[in-house]
Amino acid sequence: MVMTRDEKLAKINAHQERVNLIFEKIDTLRLMEKVLTLDNNKILEYIKESGLKGRGGAGFPTYLKWKLAADQKSDVKYVICNADEGEPGTFKDRKILEEQAEKVFTGMAICAKVIGASLGYIYLRGEYNFLVPLLVTKMNVFNDDMKKFGFNFTIDLRSGSGAYICGEETALIESMEGYRGEARNKPPYPAEKGYLGKPTVINNVETLVYCTMIVLNEGKKFKNFGTEISTGSKVFSVSGDADVEGIYELELGMTIQEFVDLFGDGDTKAVQVGGASGFCVPRKKFKETIIGFEGVPTGGSMMLFNSSRSMYHILMNYMEFMQEESCGQCTPCRVGCQQLVKGIQAIKHKKRPASYLDELVKLAKTMRVASKCGLGQSVANPFISIVENFREEIIY
Amino acid sequence: MQSSENIVRKAVKKYGKGRENLLPILQMVRKENNYLSEDQLREIATEMDLSAADVYGVATFYSFMDMQPKGKNIIRICKTITCFMKGKDSIVTALEDALGIKMGETTPDRKFSLLEANCIGWCHKGPAMLINDKVYVELTPEKAIQALEEYR
Ligand SMILES: Cc1cc2nc3c(=O)[nH]c(=O)nc-3n(C[C@H](O)[C@H](O)[C@H](O)COP(=O)(O)O)c2cc1C
Ligand code: SF4
Ligand code: FES
Image (cartoon, rainbow over all chains, first blue to last red; front, side, top):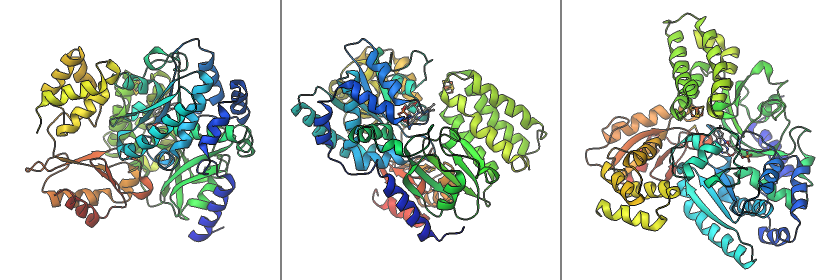
């Protein structure tokens, strides 16, 4: 089934319009007015029923996170919107913030009401500083509106300074507390002991907008989409060798094949799902691989590669990224990333035998279990999935 | 140019002495001269009642907290895979030629520093770069050189 670019676009747009949750224009003030009259348990029930899982990559059930924070006994709690969006190949949070900031704020306010927080923060990556004037203007209006409603909740903005690791929730907290962005051990989870030691819900930008829409639709619509394990839809960031690139909201549960038919350039040999910390799916597995938590989970990064691309270069680029962005705190990740980069270079330049690749795979597996945080733990995802599926390209 | 003591005091006054304000303070001070000097770090430490080593440790962690004198305008070109595939190298070459410097360097007139960055979130419109906070996308060598004119 070969489609022209226009045919692909028409199909994608039809799919988007059917879903249309994230970018739908809504009256957030009217919604907030209603939310303030709702029972917190009712709101939690909506979120629970929706089956929503975090859209920032880790996929933790949002209901459980909110419930855990709500159950904590503390006078002070916080809501943090994770807008650090540093995963290579993701850029959807930028567009959501640019076009739907009010819906993000509303999601934070709903969470604040449920858990009992009066302060919220947006942690925005430094690369998106151009958004600051727009966000501050809108934030001030929103804060004033909350005051008018007599709802004690204020949002403030914090900027990052070019560190991917600060998207990891505990590193983000360290950074907000004025420290190096070095991840903490979990537990305790931020929902128990987060910013300044207080219960803190940290949610991705997109997750918060879905919360807004789920409450607006009283738990309906969202779960009409997706699969049993991966309910709802997701905003995808599509880039690379694609006929259609950009930001699209689609149902979860498609196969990679269906995705490639819509977005690919007709010659797709691999799709990297979930960015530099995600999985590489080769052509022979397109049909059987589902985009969602039952198959390849994703924060939305979809990078397409056609047959003209060297998988060695792609792997090197990811590994160099990880090596640079590792916070360096724990040895398996710090040294492991360096050794993986050196190792594949040595094999390529015939300084090491091909069998050395198996040693490197073992190292990556060790990193998965021995690293302190998600960064080091996930290096094995791209490494093993690329090496195992494209062994020849890595060696020769 | 303001004295460095001034900007440090101003920043600490604006955000407060609490530890949790260290990042915004470092960011504001850095913005003044596009880098953080050791003197400024010591002043921040004194003002906030922290050890200089502690402040230094935090500042050096973040890649945007430049610790060496930089040009008035900082160019950061994305070097991550999609931008690379879309011809980032030819943009770097064009900029190096136009500025007469190599990657990582600053022009003698201190107007520009040329740096690389990891994915800046515009992959669908690569190659992409930042000049200070402003984004330039779908670059060609010509467009990249043109962009410099805004800052000459
Ligand atoms: C290295 C690393 C980077 C991360 N970067 C981000 C990010 O930029 N944005 C984000 O929302 N989550 C990021 N996460 C996931 C967060 O730790 C956290 O799970 C998420 O913000 C929770 O929100 P959610 O449940 O709404 O997805 C990152 C995780 C790791 C390990
Ligand atoms: S796994 Fe890597 S990023 Fe995470 S704490 Fe260890 S060194 Fe830091
Ligand atoms: S790869 Fe260059 S902006 Fe993402």
